[in-house]
Length: 64
Image 1 (cartoon, rainbow, N blue to C red):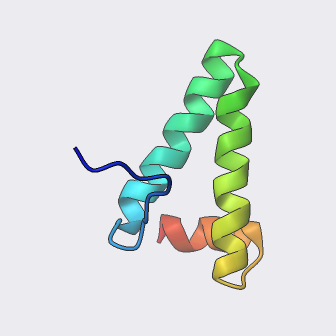
Image 2: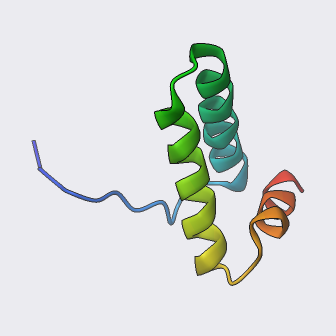
């Protein structure tokens, strides 16, 4: 098996990314494990910076 340290999300659809973010939020809220919510927030922060948009604008883009 090929080992890697980072994973690219270039080919991921908007719907798949939104589903991952929603799953992280749901899991974090229902398990009370902050790591899930922190991961969701970090992903949104990084992707919004890459797209040069505000975080709320980026989320709206994913939801379209």
